[in-house]
Length: 213
Image 1 (tube, helix red, strand yellow):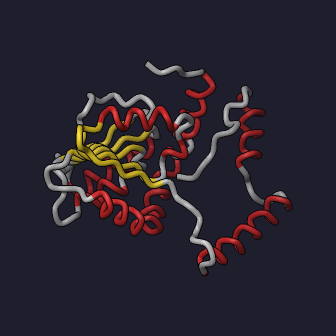
Image 2: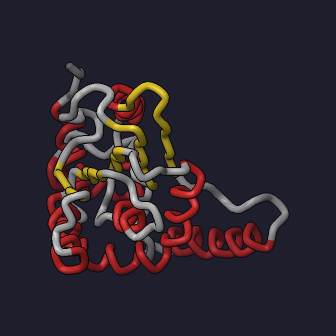
């Protein structure tokens, strides 16, 4: 049983709902921009054909679809996400592209309160999703609760480019442009988003929570 405030629960629902109407576009962009990162994460965890896999914060299923198309796909995969739109899009892809392959299923579920049995997965993955969880320590506890003894965990959070690299230079130039846009009032920041939410629904729901999926 986890302690949960109404504001925290409200923020999670708002964040999840913000993806419902853009799930199709998110799916296209994530496949194009994050496909290599997904493949790298899968490669690092070394998933086998007998593994039961859980993907926490699956979005539209980038990691599960990559897994099923691998040379030796795992025995089963469950992708969970709090966004109903994301799950609906993932299920549509499963139906259209893989004819409802029984090895894969998607469920709407809260990462902080996984409705799953203890020690029921050999591998737990999460790609760029824990920044959307207000209490990542609870999500992490849940991940290890459902992980079987000897299981593996692969979590990607994202980072800045390596120091003194050309990628870092490009990042720095982009960051300067972003900050100029913020100062000129042409870019929506997390702080500004918090103020908008406060005006609309009150309660300071979004304060202190942010991140990109």
